[in-house]
Length: 600
Image (tube, rainbow, N blue to C red; front, side, top):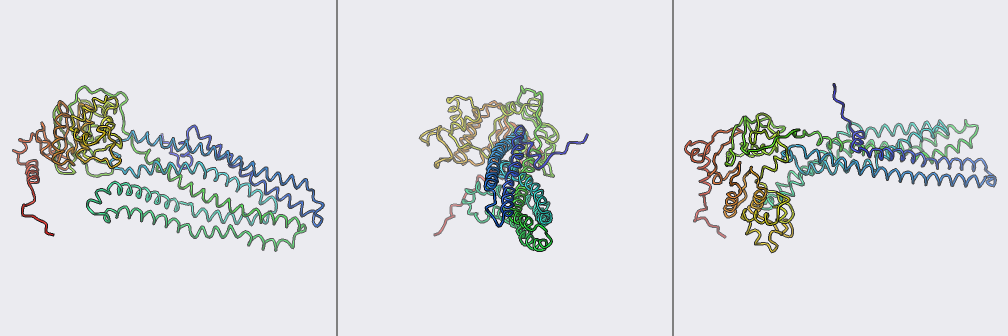
């Protein structure tokens, strides 16, 4: 059975509307009705001109009452058209708001189901742009452009009928002008323009991503005085965006000029044609009346075609926005077990694990097998890029293995409920994420139901007493505002306080002392002792001093385990670990010579 083809464009957009779709449909119907009503005053004007011209030269013969009826009818049609259009926009805005909300809700709900590792490989700026700006573009399209587009189409059909109703020869000339103008419009909204639109959206996403990365990196940039070089990628993104916008504008230049000339050339066509036709007319007064009507009416056709043109452009933008929203929705969700198992033991086993990142060609982990006994500490060391962090990320299912299995207590992590798995694992990563809130709230994030005494005890166990003491408000100090910031080592100790408060049986430590100075490292090591007591610990570190007391050390190189054993055993083997230890000892023994000096 063939899979049903997924909808795109407006039909797909209306799918997001759900039960509120009727609001958008009703808005389009009312907009069409409004378009017809707004054309009726032209007919009333034609009747007024007919009665006046028929009464010439004796204007006293004109029935003033009849003219008043026509005049008030024109006013009534116009006012009713405005009211109906206002009601249409009310419904279109309500429908658009609900559609945008449903769209964002569906995307965010879907993103919560995809592997957490996805967010480390995709820029937050690009994701934000897709969710926020593209949803906003579709909202503007549904609220304004779609009703206007439907109204313009109804206007076009009604105008065609009216053009042929009065004087078919003049009407035919006007229709030919409209066909030429419409054909010129199509050159600005075709496949080529859609390709430009995609390039434009790609360039905008890239610019958003680079802007976020540039702003985040400003402290590092200023420290190393690399402003010009760091600005290059951001500048390149801006330049690419400018080029795409310019190319699209230039591609529309000639068609737009030709369109404007054709549509506004109606007088240059109608008047010469009338001069040729008039001598052959028996009822010249009636023909003159029709000519005046067309002269008044045709400029409205130009305005209508302009509306269709801009609506077509906005439709392209909305179509591309929907496609990008669907690109997020097409990301594979992480499968969850229907009947999850419950873990009773906390030993961790990697069995013949193979993992390759999306779009990568070479596995980052290649058939690795290791065991972390319950209550023991195992360390992963090795050159950068060897797969240490990736291995740790497979335990809480930030990614899923491609081959083999990762088990906790003999149960494959893919058979555990995600909430249960997260509750049993505590994390302390190299790149600590703190909230812009109080220190108290940052620690409490690990366990929302914790009492204040427990939070204070966790802070004390994580050696945070000196951090709290230097702020007047202590643990209630709000960080990230009014110049209140913490060093990298202090942030790591708060992260450790979180992990201590969580009190999970499994602890993952990834380069937890990476940004710590000697004083902070000493305090972090003391916090480690408290945190890891009786826990199953997987530790990753480049500072080998932090892992020499581990129960077992695995050395990963190019995604494979090349050595394993205790610190002393590995030193005796005189292999990769032994060389790493020698290099580490050399690095910490290095110091600036006493004779070094700076002359002024």
